[in-house]
Image (tube, rainbow, N blue to C red; front, side):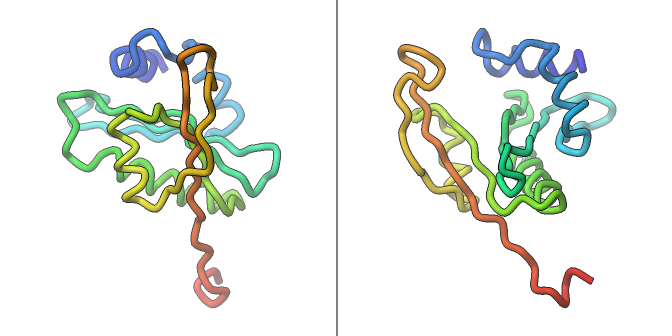
Length: 144
């Protein structure tokens, strides 16, 4: 948990979840915290959650260390989180992203579309785009 929080603070600086949040999230969604590591070193993580509407999943946080970017880790984490959310019955995944965050291009390339721009989402000057991606449900014969 501490290593995840360290990545969170290194990637996002002051705008981070408190360390206890990750512990509580794992208690709520134990299958929705995924990590990427190489040779025992944690390089990134993704955290998902299930909304009040059980068919609505969330990508709550995604971070990859700067020295590990460009290796496809973020995309792999997102895809695995989407699969885990589908397994839990989610039909869509939502996330929020700063409108100028370069990661937005990755989300859009992976099929996320903007639902709205929410001014002051986290407070003054903290605008966020709300993005959503429909999860593909396999045909019945593929689910057996």
